[in-house]
Length: 69
Image (cartoon, rainbow, N blue to C red; front, side, top):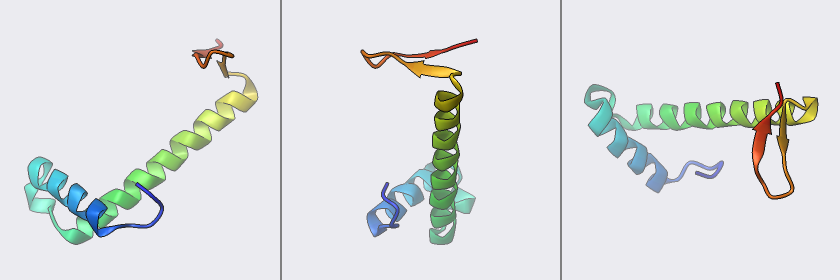
């Protein structure tokens, strides 16, 4: 999903809501769900960045990720 909400994305999430939570399957809730997913993804990226900067996580030259304890 891009930063801009597309009609196609709204319809995909609406379809997901119809299956998983039919009583909440509205366009408004689909958009709210997308906003929540984007916010959560941003927090995950921030945490990964923090862990990389502090050395808690490292990425090897071949792309493998490991956690330093």
